[in-house]
Amino acid sequence: MTQRAYNFAAGPAALPEPVLAQAQQEMMALPGPRASVMEISHRSSTFKEIIGAAEANIRNLLSVPDNYSVLFLQGGGRLQFSMIPMNLLTEQAKADYVLTGSWGKHALKEANKHGEMNVAFNGSDEGFTRTPETADLSLTTGADYLYYVCNETIEGVQFPSEPDGGSVPLVCDASSDFMHKPLDISKYGLIYACAQKNIGPAGVTVTIIRNDLLDRASDELPIYLNYKAHADAGSLMNTAPTFAIYIVRLVTDWLVNDVGGLDKMYAINQAKAKTLYDVIDQYPDFYQGHAKPESRSLMNVTFRLPSDELTKKFLAASEEKNLTALGGHRSVGGIRASIYNAMPVAGVEALRDFMIDFCKQNG
Ligand code: PMP
Image (cartoon, rainbow, N blue to C red):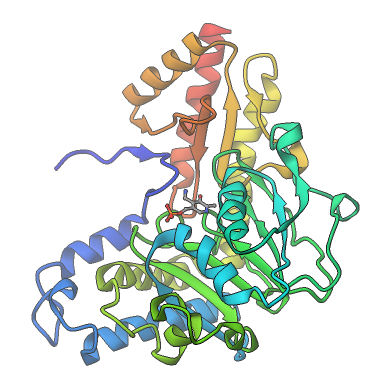
């Protein structure tokens, strides 16, 4: 078998090895149906047990209150950019958008098709290097919701804690840091994450929504775009992405049983990120971190080298050391090391050692 690399891809991203091993073991046949998870009905008792366990794990890991629904949806993060305004805007069609990077901008563009949203903070003037302080936010009184992206995957800018929107429902795109630490879900009206970074493969998006917000949508909405229809059907209105949900179940089993919960996961994530930011801080003339220190992402560590030539050399040399997919997003360049939950400490330490050697040889 091909040797596995330390894969620093931003998404789809590395999965925990025990999860891949279990999926491999069960690929040909699950006990009971004696067929693989991809070959059985989404309405079979075996699949209902799988989706039920995935939901129970998410509820348990995040202590999701009973008045919230956990939905498994398709259409990726992008469809949420549209479903959120379509379901949550009221007649006034006023929501606040906080822009700390590229994904927030994409979401705003979709929401503006339904009215003119208020930009409560625009970090683009500063090159998307930081999250706002409460005083930086220009909020609309009585807004339908306050939207933000807790971790901007491309820029590597992460909120250390939730912005304060008062009584306005907080809506959060947690696609690239979902389940990297414990959260107080009761602070949110809606929080969602496409799975392919931190909790599974591409093909499923988890949306957690406070039940009173389910009633805001009009019955005129196309049924697939209506959160309430999904909640009423237990995420089985149509054929669910069964394989993706099965992997989410295995990843969340891993978080519960192997890692020991989100407090432990968070401590590991903080230590992994510190390992890399310490190198950046130690060699500031060679490695220039993108985010301001207080807004640095624990998941996507973004930095630049002194020249494009050195960046190319860094990428080629890291590949040779079995450290892969370190190129920054095509829109910003530079280097991005995505170190989600599944990236082992040893992978981060290997990258740290490589960065130090590369700087010594080329700095
Ligand atoms: N939000 C964030 C924070 C993302 O990183 C991404 C994907 N990189 C998306 C939304 C879009 O997700 P998808 O590609 O599943 O539509």
